[in-house]
Amino acid sequence: MANFKTHLNTAAITTGLGAAVLLSAEHISLNGALWLWFLGTIGGLLPDIDSDNSTSLDILFNLFASSAALIAVYYINAAQVSLIELIALPLLIYTTMRFLIRPLFEKITVHRGSCHSLSFVLLIALITTQIVWRMAPQASEQAIIMAWFSGGFVFIGGFIHLALDEIYSIDLSNMRIKRSFGTALKLAEFKNKSLTLLTVSSIIALAYTTPSPNETLNTLSNWSKLKLQPYTFNIG
Image 1 (cartoon, helix red, strand yellow):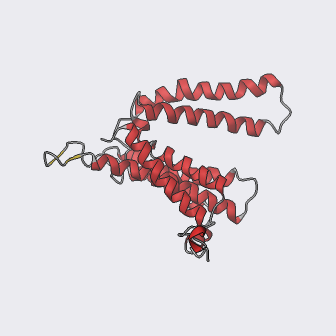
Image 2 (tube, helix red, strand yellow; image 1 turned 90 degrees about the horizontal axis):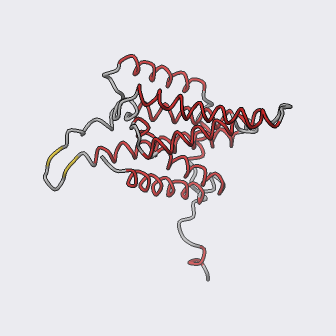
Image 3 (spheres, helix red, strand yellow; image 1 turned 45 degrees about the vertical axis):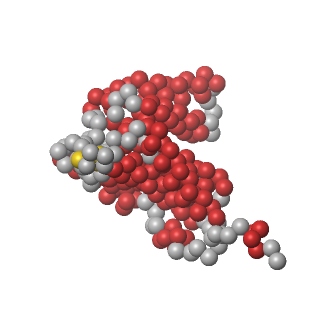
């Protein structure tokens, strides 16, 4: 199994290159590229959320808790609330996720279980697409494209994590396959049929309610503005 640094660096480098390509082709802005790079890197840590007391778990749950608190501030800021309410509600949300939801999650999950599967990564990618789309200031084509890109980069980062774990399950020096081989890059955790059914049902529901990906596919089919050669090479 690859360690935390390997997962982090590989996901950051790969998704960073992907974001740079989209930026060079003028499919996204600089801020969009940084956002996708961030999501791809986080996606590279995502499957290890089922590993109790891991660095990935600490980072991800702190990030989720902070994000939930910030979203709460974003929505209640429009209402007429007092300073105490503005401070207390996000603090309550963060505390609940950090000290109630996280221990519960640790109790019900098993390392290399359902979270180490393509279906879980796809589920989180679709959830990301939904969140980015629904929180966009306006329902424009660009917002839809960015939502699909966001979900796509989370999926790419998660897939990289699973692929690395499988690669590290092969001991090339001793020419043997470790017992962990096949526990990471799998479609779903079929040992838990009820959880697998819930995951697949959620994926279908999310896919059905997401905006059409046609504009995103059209954008990805046009690479006429991609700059492969520096302008300095074109002098004269």
